[in-house]
Image (cartoon, rainbow, N blue to C red; front, side, top):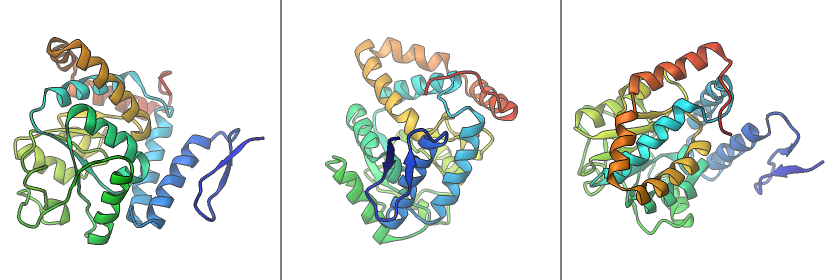
Length: 261
């Protein structure tokens, strides 16, 4: 029987036959992120909450997520100054995919975390650079996002402060509201369709980050070839309320229709 184990000391051995294999391996990434000083220990709570919602939608990329992914790809391609905001959980789960997405759409990567820690901000930057990022912007005390009183208000003047579209997976609801109030379009990834973030964002992808980021990169590549007319069509087909209602129905029923793994 084959089994997978992460390289960190003390990591769990998870047989490939285990029914929770994929979820447990993702969990290992978050634990490793905490041990490496990249992810806040509070991120473990957020990960557990996300797992519960993912279970309810069948741990698959559902049609409502696919619609949002298509629109998100179009919005990122149409953006003049797109920025990808990266926190500790995102860095631990999908650093390479985030770097690839940034390269594909010409988006800057910017570190932004809730629990203040210069050491952790630098650790996140190091993870992104190891994943291939040539430049990672850091938050600046000289530039703030109005309406916030915590650490996430600090933004880079050449990054989030200047952006017209911000991709913020695993976002805080109050900062999503602040970004929208500042006139920016926000794309988020949130497994909870009832959250303030999901409802406030311009486009919400109700899916697991590790599943949807590769799909988002695929759609960006396809739409790049298709051109602006295809971008406009993808955005015209996106209905924010409709996506959230479909996701909520799936969560409440606990019997989501078959989707894409």
